[in-house]
Image (tube, rainbow, N blue to C red; front, top):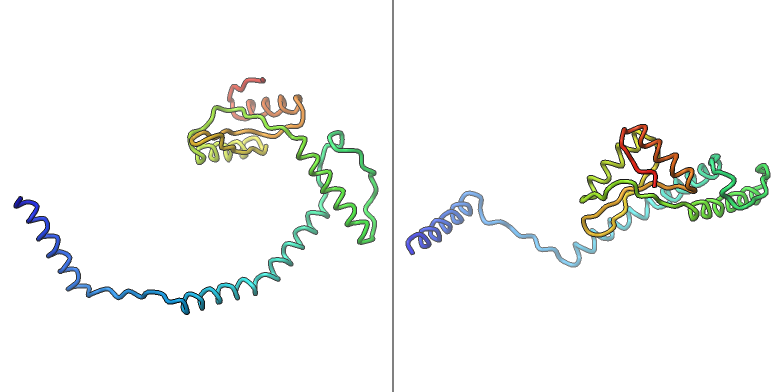
Length: 179
């Protein structure tokens, strides 16, 4: 009983001492007007930056459209291979055809999970980072369920899958099954 009473009295004295030394804190409760002013100021900053972001996005899209992308032609639908012309309409049509072909290419990809599941996403991402440095291949981490993260790579056909598995094995020394 005396211990509890001593604890309560000691705590009260400590809190009172803190208030004496530091003073009573001032609470600045926000009002609707101040919150609205801060919101309006932030919104105005976003509106000022929007044209610059849109311009940068357009430049990026144009740059990507101009670059050559290496796509295996046997996996794409047949397209008329025509050299890009100087017309804006022809370039837009070529870019649309390329985007459609990329969608088909991505849809035909399969994913092969090749390693035991990880218990944390951080561990799986670290594994992927090291593999990407060593092999130069692209990998992804998939959350199967809570606490289960699987690492895999994309492939188009069985030969490519076997090639990538042997490339990973050769670069890392890991003994991966070919199935």
